[in-house]
Length: 134
Image (cartoon, rainbow, N blue to C red; front, side, top):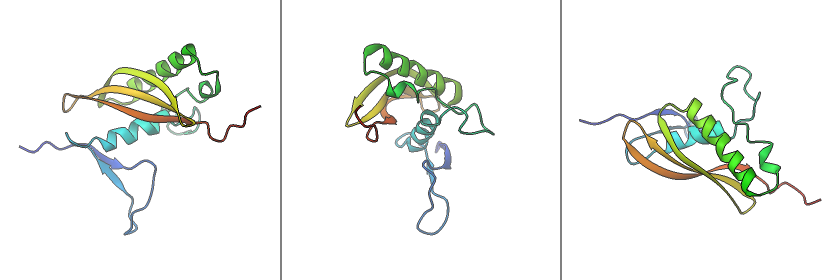
């Protein structure tokens, strides 16, 4: 029996070569749609979506704080809270935060409940390339 996955509009929103909206899907071997949903949650600022005010992560201001253990712990906690509250298809196991190449990534270990499989993925949550040194 074939197990159906999750399908929805891709993030970031874009049009395909035939003019339609690009969609992504999820199955046991490809979790791209869930990853896009997680990225969308983590990169949405508070009050950015007035009609869907619950979709947000409070990490925007923390990204520009000093890169120390306490800031990384705070960002990891905020990421875990946002994903736990809004993404009911997964169970968050662990979140770490790293910075690499002028970007901040959440390293999220999570279980996709439908498939009972655990994945670890890097999700970009901040971009520091436009920040000028004082």
